[in-house]
Length: 423
Image (tube, rainbow, N blue to C red):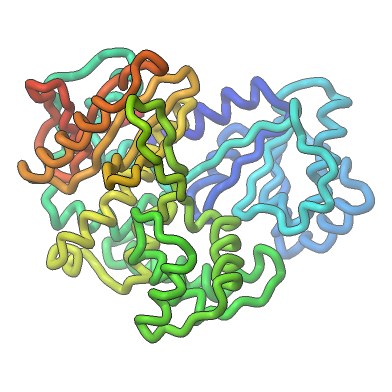
């Protein structure tokens, strides 16, 4: 269905290092498929034929569920949180790595049943919808890893998509199952995904009954604040202003927490570098969905609507770019951050590796004026970093939505279409 995912390699590496590997992420992103490729036996906790028995055994004889060839996959493990401690004990007794793979599309609701963190026995792997490189819609001519090693390609070919084609990719999203569907069916599928989230998943995650209509309205407000640091109070006012009705801010917070627990939303944390000046850095997280298609579906728009509203198009393209950068950063043992200071200087993405190296990235839909604006922002931020206290950035990049090739400007800044990027 699709090329070997980045997660395949990450899973293989972790199975050599830990007794249990927990793969978590949104539904329909390929967690089970990825795990099954390396598992030697499988237990589906949510199989309706054995669900009640599985949960009963997790309470009384959990070690029976771990019998079988290793690594054994326990799918949707969060249905029986007591399996966590049982797995920790079992792999400690076996004393071998690569014994179990847990997959789950939600954080377990009752963490009080977990008495041990799993340190030394568990490894965590977060999966997201596919990047364009994984769905074969990027040439992969520019390697993010290569940039960190000083291999700045001066010119490389990208897939030269039109705005219309890029708009479709945003609306379809990076869901593996959508790649085999017709364009119309793929767009319907993400609407069905949102329906499942608001009608079922947001309540099932912790057993708290939530209003589907309000959940949908809240998601729509969240979509309007993509790429911003909007506080809960702003989302509350947005709901009131747009006559959508608003519960209390505390209730809104509980809904957002549930959406995070099922990996529908995934905010970006603030980056805090050493600067030469004493500039106050904003520390609020930046709002994002795990995939742009969710935001587009809740807004009720399609590819044609994005073409007519390039401002919204650009904001939602930023969500796609953050998705891809997160996937690539995971492969490099890194993380994606966002920078903004009190003076309004903002950098869309900072890819920061554990070894301290980092790259600054501005995300623009395309066009000379937007690219120039992004380049000026990058140079301004780079000039403020105190390189006596931290290294200079490994690269400065304007990541674009469209363009036939990537290149390096005379000032050293890279201009890279997202359709040429890979890990």
